[in-house]
Image (cartoon, rainbow, N blue to C red):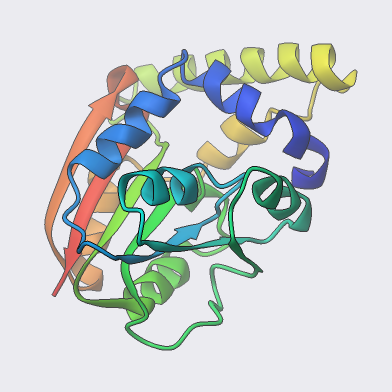
Length: 216
């Protein structure tokens, strides 16, 4: 599926975020403390937005883009991402304490096991390093949840038909949310996994969340 959507992935990301995706990602960078020459992991990288943004802000940075879909990484390399690895978030091919920061953009809800992925992220992050996440979440308000899912489903069906002639292509977004967590639930998971100073920012009535967390 992600190989199919890869060429349109950036367009869909902008569309579903009301054009706010770049602003949200800049906000992610604004609020994280990195050294002058950081080594960062761009997990579930897609076409490499976080990798490119980190290198623009920190010219000496080493950014490693990891995605499970090789087609996404091909597009990332075409945009100038230097270091790419095709890999699984549940079994990251890196030693312990490898990265100053791990960025995850719209990837958490697609991992088969959120607990396993967060534990792997914590493992490869250096003590005092950070996790920065931007993702869709279930709104905390139970009355808003079905409305939000219905909106995402309608958007996904429309763009699937327009771009691919297949209405189900982009309904993976609401489908992945149905068994996902809220922003507060994810914050609690980070604290249980060994993170402190967990900060959040909410958008679209809690349907989009930014998390910053520092590893003990």
